Image 1 (cartoon, rainbow, N blue to C red):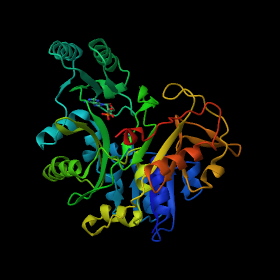
Image 2: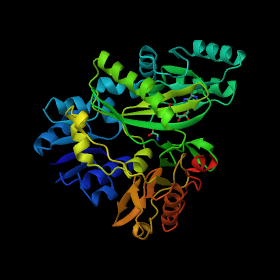
Image 3: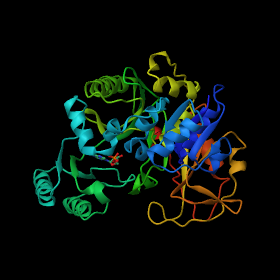
Length: 423
Ligand code: AMP
Ligand code: GLY
């Protein structure tokens, strides 16, 4: 079969790598892809509007379109391609609002009994400010979130009232564009986070193995929030007992919700979970694979990824078999100097071949080819991923590989998986 894969990040490289291993797959077109994906697939440049993507899929007679990032999903690419009769892995535009609007997502959770932080939504600054003052007066902290997509930004986890008020000010001043003209203010939750990804075709919902991201830039979970500095799987915080609660309260209710709302959901649902004293609560839904969780999770997948994604697209997920390696996996993100602020780019990257010599996989994210040289071109540049008999071994293999890679300004966390070791 031939597949069109939309996206260009580390997540898409990991998906591409998984698809390449399938005996069912002939051609993989990546739009736009990245230099790492170009080594195992054909990168194509297609305008990003729905019609151009759908027409390309028709022209090339692809058998499946896989959509990686949230922006094309929210834009309705899945609907446009399905209208041409081609199977798509990815929810409809209407269903993608579960990520595209935090207010929509929260009201869905409340309606279907999915545990989540208490919240209120505002379209006027003064009312939002009053609400925050009342919350702090009552001894509660808050998180301020721009309603719409803000490219991983737009969430202010306030450490005090002044920061929360400044966050609201920022949203309404347009710091996150139209995404911030509506603001969700949430109860600040405490606990350990974990990511639960599940496949669903609207009839069946199947969780993948658990994982944990590292959102802060610096070791010890210090510094500013980022898109994710590393991940590992499984996350020991997700015990069998907790997973059973998540299945019942989050995943089963999610499935019931999309059925009752008649949302066409064939793809992956990502639940960002806070494990609180009262039990698991959903921080957010994403309508796509997580990045960098996917790099760790799919590295443990020993089934046929193309077959699994096609079955999801064709509403045959009940016939799919998810086969997982018991071996843990770790992904260490290598980022550009300056990230998550203004980055320094254009420096040649050395050592990827050497890093891969002992079995690590180096997924590309923010790389580019300039005059035949591989250079850093984005915030998160590479995801160095390894599997091991134990988590310790996976961590050691990943960091041994990291040690072979270099470019000017490269930075990374040295403590990926630390929470697993502190248990
Ligand atoms: P989100 O984009 O909604 O996942 O938020 C990004 C990060 O902000 C999450 O991964 C959490 O670390 C943090 N966060 C979001 N909502 C809350 C909350 N209600 N309480 C505490 N932390 C939160
Ligand atoms: N790793 C966080 C995300 O993909 O949203």
